[in-house]
Image 1 (cartoon, one colour):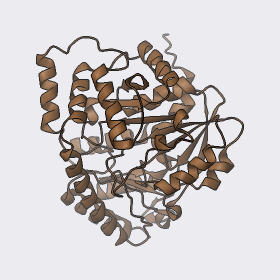
Image 2 (cartoon, one colour; image 1 turned 180 degrees about the vertical axis):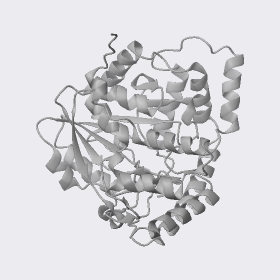
Image 3 (tube, helix red, strand yellow; image 1 turned 120 degrees about the vertical axis):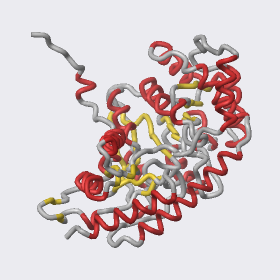
Amino acid sequence: MEQIHISERIRQMAASQTLAMSQKSSELRAAGVDVINLSVGEPDFDTPSHIKEAAKKAIDDNYTRYPPVPGYMDLRQAIARKLRDENGLDYTPQQVVVSGGAKQSLSNIILAMVNPGDEVIIPVPAWVSYIEMVKLAGGVNVLVPAGVEQDFKITPQQLEYAITERTRMILLCSPSNPSGSVYSREELEAIVAVLARHPEITVLADEIYEHINYTGSFTSLGSFPEIAGRTVIVNGVSKAYAMTGWRVGFMAGPVEVAKAVTKLQGQTTSGISSIAQRAALAAYEGSQDCVAEMREAFRRRRDLVVRLAREIPGLKVNEPQGAFYLFPGVSAYLGKRFGERVIADDNDLCMYLLEEAHVATVSGSAFCLPGYIRLSYAASDEALAEAMRRIGEALGKLV
């Protein structure tokens, strides 16, 4: 009899719960159920026209051959200019590597820098893939929880307590997926003061939601001189320019890291889509009005969802300052029943909301902080209003 052997590293890897919930909602839709999907973390806008036109022109100009592994030089130059002009960061194109989305950039960095047994500090709630990337590299996750009471942001004291002699990296995402929280410059200064005392720790800053930020300002971790030489920035075009399907992200950091990531990428994917890179160049070099317009739409939707969520008894709701997520506490509903159905945890609650309210959400457990659910408000105002009505009605049936 034939035997198929799957590696132990894959057996131990958890599947993405965000993708799993999105798949379940798609299956219900295919069966004719009117599902409102608030589980997906992507803008619902179309890619701006000038970016699409650049991709069409790239095809006509025969950008159809293998691109350089770290990305086209003019795109890396444009990214370096963006980092200088928008963030005050001094990176050369040689310190920039373009990859297949910020997700690949993060994975590349972790695989290139984390050895088996190395500890990586991750504030939670955290995006579902961070933990699995660290595990894949053989690293040890050190999770630092921060609930709604502290606006989902860790304190310097928590960070100091989490650091051991084996700590080699901290991964910080601001604005945050899944909470939408944004660290202020003052809060980051306090975090940096701790990290300054530990020169052996690399700072990995996931800044993919930089432009979906309602505070009026954004501070990159790379802008602090005390840690700039050991900070690696990850960003991309997916969220700011509604280009999730184009798969273009980048890292910027020390030359040694850029070389290591290029070496790894050269043996796995090589350079990413030539057409997508030309589109990304147009995104960075063209008008930024589209970014501001989408941000204002998300701000309006944020205000709508927060207001409606606060009208639902039992939900603990903060006001997220970035991204397009709400992460309400739902512990008041755990242990309740709907007929014979017991809502034991947040996973049960998400499944209940999908089957009873026909609204897809993601459990807080998927982001390593049980007792919450994540709602994405990257949907129309009408869909959001109806989704919140359905959620309120379904929660009201629990006793």
